[in-house]
Structures are given as structure tokens and as C-alpha cells.
Amino acid sequence: MATNPEAQPMYMDDCWYVAAWTHEIEPGQLLSRTICGRRVLFWRDRAGRLFAMDDRCCHRGAPLSCGRHEGDTVRCMYHGFLYDGSGRCVEIPGHDRVPPKAQVRTYAVVEQHRWVWLWIGDAAEAEPALIPDTHWLTDPEWACTPPGYMHYEVNCQLVHDNLLDFSHLSYVHPNTLGGSEEYAQLRSKVDRLDNGLRITRWFMDRPPPPFVAALLEAKGMSGNVDRWNNYNFLLPGLLIMDSGFAPAGSGAERGDRRAAIEFRHCQAVTPETADSCHYFFCQPRNFDRDKPEVSERLYRSVVAAFEEDRAIITAQARCLREDADFVPMPCGLDLALVQFRALIDQRLAAQRERHARRDARP
Ligand code: FES
Ligand SMILES: [Fe+2]
Image 1 (cartoon, helix red, strand yellow):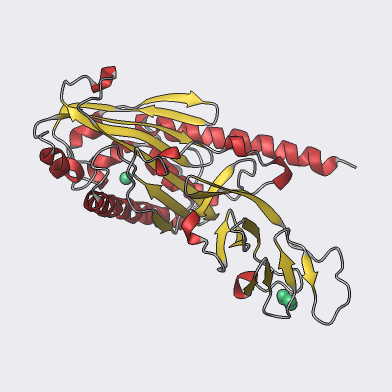
Image 2 (cartoon, protein in one colour):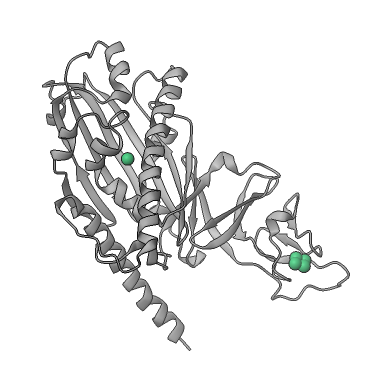
């Protein structure tokens, strides 16, 4: 953790970013969202097919999102250039022919398990098989909280850092996700994956945290519990977590989850600009699937907790901006953060070389 993350300008371009919930892009509508510093327009044709392209008209740069959806095309409402889903301008008012250069850049985009995944690199290199598995978002065996979204006015790395070290639960979330300060005494196990980290954290035989205490009580689990937060934190910033609670000593740590309640948290942190990011989240669960009131209650608890995160992280970012020379003082709590940042640095270094080779081609 040697550098001030507020000064990180480059984005990985060989991976998928969560850009939206699928329902955010409604038929006939135009959605503009900035991803990795690029203003991208999302829209659908009449068949529902999704397109992503630069939200900037090639004529004089007006946002196409201020334009008009016309069936399978989008019209810029400054001087009327008309674009199809391939980004090609197919009509210029008052002109018989459209020059071939009249087009905007398009992006590879995939809808999978209620998330819209965007590849900001060369669309020809986009590989859908690289999209991480988040099937719990649509699996009928799992019930979801309402789709969550939050906007952050900080560099995405600060949100990664927060998610990579759960010791903060004790101090940021004492009345929501956290509970006791003993939780911060634990050390997570951190293992390296090809595209991220695996983090394992078991908290045995302790009272449950406030956000699930009433739920567990309603299920007859009134005593201490064994709790786990085991997750993959994947590039470019995706948390997929197996977490849950079981009666203390019931064997969950050894694989016996018959008495447990489980969650599969899916969270995505996507850069907007160097100073802001998007945060998408949902908490699928395997219990009380037919109870929307449980979904609502969990959603409210989670949002309250994530507001707590946003408050401290935003305050932290303000401090960091005030002193570009500040150097953090790492400690054992930062193991996963350091490793994840190293992973990003490696990927960015490889990307620079790849781009240099590409640019040197005759
Ligand atoms: S800026 Fe779009 S048509 Fe002129
Ligand atoms: Fe948190």
C-alpha cells in the first residue's frame, strides 16, 4: 500500500465490469453511465438486444443520451445524425451519403444473471467465458434482496480496501453487520487465485450480529453462533461471498450446514472516474425464500451498513486528497489489500506492454 489511491488513473481493459442492473435499461429508453472514465450509452433495439456505445455524437460531440430512441436506432437531437446498434451513422439530414468515418465506438456487452457486463477494451477480444459466476442472482433456490446500487465519490480502490478487510466490521458496523470488537481480533486467511484472492474468516461461538439476530431467533437459534465470511475478491473489483450462521458447534466449519442459514453476497465495484465509482450489490439467501418482508428487512439493514461504509470511506478520501504525499502505514490487517493492489499493478504493467506492442505494429 505504497501509493495514494486517489492518484490512480489507469483502468484494466481486459476484463468485464458490472455496468448496470439489466432492468435499468428499459425498452425505448437511453441510459448514460460513465464507466472507467468513458461515458457509455446503453440502449435496446425493438427485439430487446442490448447495445453499448460512446455517448458522444461523432459530429460535434453532443451526448446521444440527450437524443431520441427510434426503433432500432438512436438519433442525436442536436443536428439529427442517426445511429444503428453497430455505432454506424446511417443518416445525416440533408446528405445523400454518409461518410464511413461517421460512427461511434461500440463496446462488448453481455447480460448475465441480472447484471450488465461491459468490456472496455477491444470488443473483438471480449471473452464472455471470463464473466464470473453470479448465478445466485437468478437461481430460484436463492431469494434475493432488492437490487442495490450506491454511488461513491472516491477512487474505487478505497472501496476495494474496505471489502478486503472485514476487521472494520467491529468499528464501522457495531450496530448492523458487526457486533463485537472481538471480530476485529481475527485474522483472515488469504489465498491467491488466478484472478483475485480467496479470503476465509470463521468466527466461532459468539453472539450473532444485530442485522440477523432477530431472524435467527425466529428460527429458534437464540444462542451463540458460528459465523463465516468466505469470499472471492476478483479483478476488477467483484466480491462473491459465501457467508452464513449456524448454531455454535453444529459443524458448519466441517461442512455440515444442515442447521445453517446461508447467503451468497454479490457485490461489484466499478470505476466511474478516478474520483468516483459505482457499487452494485445483492444478498441472495437460502432461507425464508417466500418472505418478501425478510428481503426488505435484510435490504434495509445492508443499506444502513453500506451507508456506514460510505461515510467513513468518503471521509478517508477527503483526508487523502488533502495531502498527496501521505504514505499509509501498513499493518497485518492490510495483507489482502496489499496483495490485491499488487495484482492490479501486475495486470496494468502487462496491459502497458500489450498496448506498446499493439501501437508499434506497422
Ligand atoms: S452533434 Fe450530433 S448531430 Fe451534431
Ligand atoms: Fe463494511
